[in-house]
Image (cartoon, helix red, strand yellow):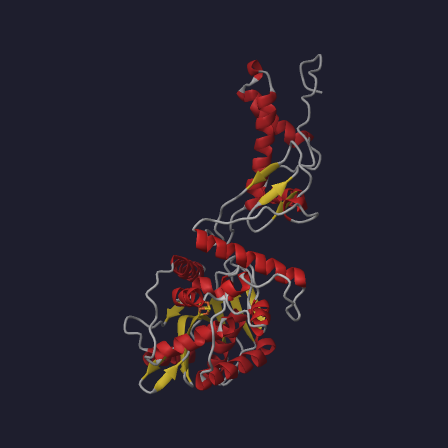
Length: 424
Ligand code: SF4
């Protein structure tokens, strides 16, 4: 969002921000109007996503060029002159170039840069061709904010050639090309755009609530300061927004107030045990804050919860905590199944090797262990990554943070050597 002269210019990114957090729209608006400041805040995660997104876009551009397609680049250049870039985009569309890279649109107080336009042989007011939008996204699955951006670019494109596109495409981080049917999303896009424009005009009072977008948001530090200053209920671990609203309606508006509430208080539309859990959590956090050290309580074991939800312990258990980053290589991610599969094999081979008498611990025995496991363990696939991954997924319990498994097989005993010297 930016004010140019007397005009406020918005972009599809503002619309995506509005879906995530209405407070963000008001903060951006205040900055654009010169009433507020963008906090100086280094967000390494947001920088990483931006960098990976640019790499993904350039990789797709490279693929198009390597495939022999002529790609005409528009872009904003150093001067970031939207007017000139939008005129260059219209000219390139009129010329019917096969691909446009960084096509710039400017109309009705909105502006944006579409990653790619692809020529399709569908007649329009310009001639026997028209265009569809291609947008590169790091995500592995399409989301509503992606569809909205495509709807914006496609609508702007439709105004130039007087023919609304029917389809736009996402190039995901997995390199998958996903078509989006625009008639399916255009009504939602129009309604959201109207709500956004109404919010920009009316400027309602909004308050920050944590959401998924916070990790990428430029205003995160100022929102966190505000939550801290107000001792806001969002500080209670695992609390939900609807619970905050119900507590506030009962007059409990801060973390300290919740911590000091009597545990038997009744909150409308909140089960007593839920209130009790939130109250205990808040009390622990207040104790931690006051004592300066982490307070904790040992919970009595409960059937089916916490560690009791894991399979019974067994001497063959192996518990792993794998670290990885989803954007290390978006097209593939961390091949968790493959890594875990080989760890299972190696751990079993190693334990078998360790149980052997010292005199028999040879490299040959180690090789034999792995090879023999592959031959004799029922259902254990050959070590190609897909088969091992599928097998591991059938054997392991994955959570966001860890993988836990009780292998259904045990290391087989070494078969007796036959008289001929081979193994039975
Ligand atoms: S940090 Fe979160 S709550 Fe604050 S403006 Fe950004 S998205 Fe909204």
